Image 1 (cartoon, rainbow, N blue to C red):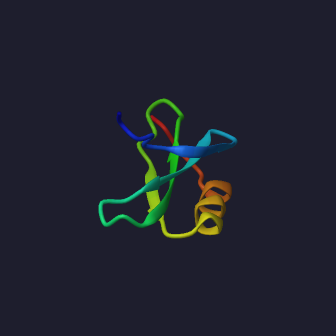
Image 2: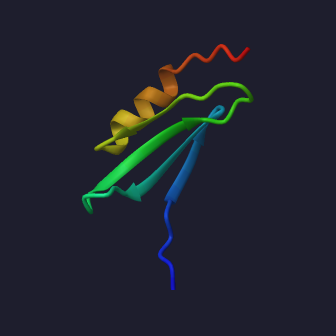
Length: 62
């Protein structure tokens, strides 16, 4: 049975934040913009950094 890849998902505006296990087995947090045309995403080692990035992200999709 395959493990869940992402869990503990939240949304801040159009940004989705989720927790996952990185390739080294550590917990990591991803913030990704879901706006059409915006390809921004980033991985962080703590949840607070991902939430801060989500709150300050300004996308300009074309």
